[in-house]
Image (cartoon, helix red, strand yellow):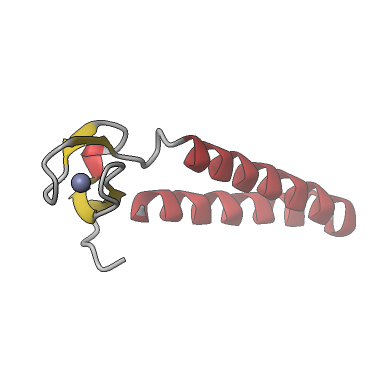
Length: 94
Ligand SMILES: [Zn+2]
């Protein structure tokens, strides 16, 4: 995606045109610049995005527990903190 960091990509549900919208508009209705009809914008309220976030958090917890069992509490906590920081950065970038 070539959109700037303040925008996300949306796809019109009527004509499939792709266009950038403000990140703050995620989950709302926006008028498509191609066909002019209102279309819902995905983003953080998107069911798929919710599944991805859930899977990422679950993966982080599982990885932390595995490292905890192998490397002890300090290593487990370190993996969890680093993973949480990465998830935070990814969330901020989207
Ligand atoms: Zn359209």
